[in-house]
Image 1 (tube, one colour):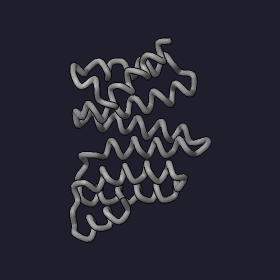
Image 2: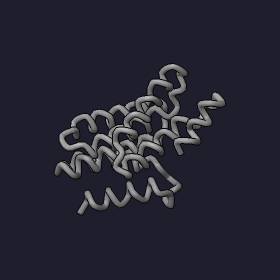
Image 3: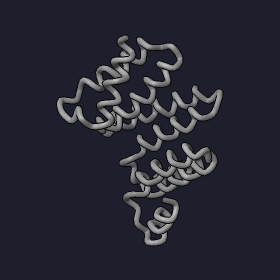
Length: 150
């Protein structure tokens, strides 16, 4: 993945870089290399600011929140990253990205024992969807809502 992203940079291909950076950061985090994951996201945020291509910024903030969840004591920063991701997705009317960010924040609140707050956030976002219920994002949101209802 790192080689592919470097190739994009060498050839000045910008479109898939934020998408790839989010995936790369998640992969590095799962491998225990949080420093590499954060560096990748930070570089991507800088590139997004330079280029003005903010189409995937919501997902970058969501991914930052997910990375912060790996670090003990940083749940407040993770919550802020998720809230920023939701705000950006709403401003872009990007319903799927808002669902992802709302699901991440709802999981954080669930883990903190704030089940009602988590459900109140996620249920209306999930309710916007009228199709695509077989997709992973909607399946995971539904499972989380079911867990919060139990």
